[in-house]
Length: 114
Image 1 (cartoon, rainbow, N blue to C red):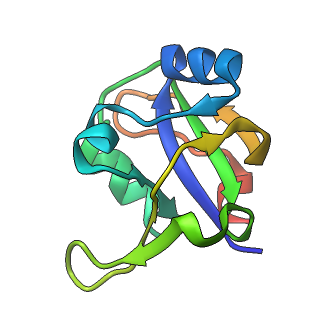
Image 2 (image 1 turned 60 degrees about the vertical axis):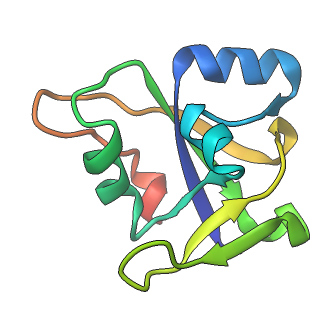
């Protein structure tokens, strides 16, 4: 199974947990799909898009569970990124862990790279 990751804030996580689904962050809604990253991409994604922010949650999802709604696309540099065209059912979230900021970088749970 291929794990993919989404970084969201605690408030969005709480709302998604209550609703049973995650509809996307502001950028996802603007672009028309939910942006995910692979384990090899997630640290750079954090540096580019959420550096310095606390109160974040890292969601891990098995890519294969998302079916045909998940597309692998190359938006920059030829790298394939997973994009979900639809909502993320929270039942498909394998785990959700805090993504703390230590003042210089985010500290990823070891399971991210296992």
